[in-house]
Amino acid sequence: MADQRTADDITPLKLRVCQEIDRRRADIVGVAEDIWRHPELGYKEKRTAQLVAEQFGHLGLSYREGLAFTGVKARARCGAGPGPTVAIMGELDAVINTGHPDADPVTGAVHACGHHGQIAAMLGAAFGLLGADALPALAGELVFFAVPAEETLEMEWRNELRHQGKLQFLSGKPELIARGEYDDIDITMMVHGTSKPEDKLCRMLDSVNGYFVKLVQFLGRPAHAGGSPHQGINALNAAMLGLSAIHAQRETFRDQDTVRVHPIITKGGDAVNVVPSDVRMETFVRGKTIDAIVDAARKVDRALRAGAMAVGARVRIETLAGHLPQVVPPHLAAAFKENMVSLIGAGQYVDGGHTTGSTDIGDLSQVKPTIQPHVGGAVGTGHGSDYWVVDYEAAVINPAKAMAMTAIDLLANGAALGRRVVAEDRPPMTRDDYLAFMRKWTRLDEYDEGGL
Image 1 (cartoon, rainbow, N blue to C red):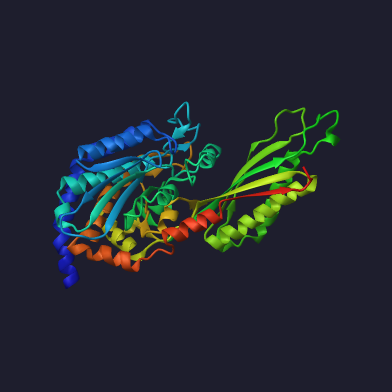
Image 2: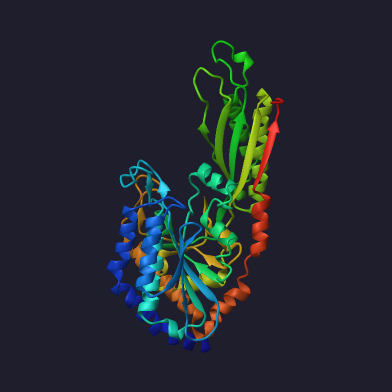
C-alpha cells in the first residue's frame, strides 16, 4: 500500500511534465531536424554543441562547454533537499557514409545512427522537467549532458591527438571519465535509436559487445617491383598473410563470446612499380566480455606477427582500449521500463538480448549505474545509406517523456529510488579501476622479424 501511495503521489507531476513535452513537441522535433541537416563528426561538433548551449541558455540553466573539445553540460539543483545527481545524456556526433543522400558533401557525415534524436530527446526531457516546474518536488540534482565522439572514426587523426597529449582516449565518454566529468554524477541514462523491427518501439538489451582497436603497420624494404623484387621485403604480402592467419583463428572463437574481428587495409603501398614497404591496417576486436576481447586480441597479435615473420618484415601493433561491454543495472532498468510501457504498451517493449555492436555507454556503465534502451522510429540499416527517422514520436518524444518520468521516480520522495540504485546497482569498477585497465591495454608492440 505504501508503494502505491508513493506512485500515486508523483503521477500528477509526471502528467504535467509529459504535457509540457507535448506542448513543446514542434520545438523538440525541430532540434532533431536541424541537427540532421548539419551533421558533424566526433570532437568536431561545434555547431551542434552551440545549438545545445543556446537551448540550455533559453531554459535558464548554467552550463559548461568545450568539455573534451565539444561537450556541453548543464546542471540544475532540485528543491527538496540533497540526493543523488541524475544525468540525462545525448550524443553530438554523426557517422561517415558518403553514399547517404543527406551526407555532408565535404565530410561524408550523416546522422545514420540517430544521434540527432538523442540530443533532441535529452533536451525534450529538460524542457518538460523545467517547463512543468518539477524540480521543487525532487531531491538531488539533474544534469543534462551533450557528449562528443561516440562513433570511433578518423582513428589516425584521433590517435595523433592522443600522441600530442590532447586526448587520452578515442571516444567521448572514456575521455570524459578520464577528465573527471562524471565524478559529480551518480546515475546516467540516455536512449539510442534502432531500426530493427524485432526491437519494436523499445528494447532494453542485457549486454553489448566491447572492443579493442588495433592500428597496424607492416614495414618492409622497397625495391623495383619488376626489375629487382628479390631485393625487397613485401609488406603487403606480410599483411595479406596476417589477414589469412586471423581468418584461421575464427574457429577458435566461442559462439557465446560473440567475437567479431573485421580488419581493413588503409594503405597498400606507395607505387605499383615499387615493392610495398609501408602497409597499414585497422581493425576492431570485439567480444561480449573483457576476457573474450583479451583472448581474441592476443590471437590477432599472434596472427599479425606470423605474417611479418613469413616474409621477414617488421610489424608495429598499436592497441587502444576502445569500448567496454555494457552492464545493465536492474533497478534503474525496471524504473525506465515501467514509464516507457505506460507510453507505448507492454507489447511494444522488448526485454533482454545482446548486440554485437559496441558503444562507449559500455564504458560508462562500468563505473556508473547506466542505461541506454534502444528506441524505434527509424527504418533502414543502422549506419547505412537507407537509414531514416520516420517517426519522431517514437524516436524522440516518447523517449524524452520516459527519461523525464524516470528522473522523477529516482529523485521524488526524498530520492528513495535513486539512493537504492546507487546502493544496490553497483557497477563493477571504480573510476580508478577503469582508467588502470584502459591504460594497461593502450600499448605499442613491435616485432622486427627480419632484422630491419
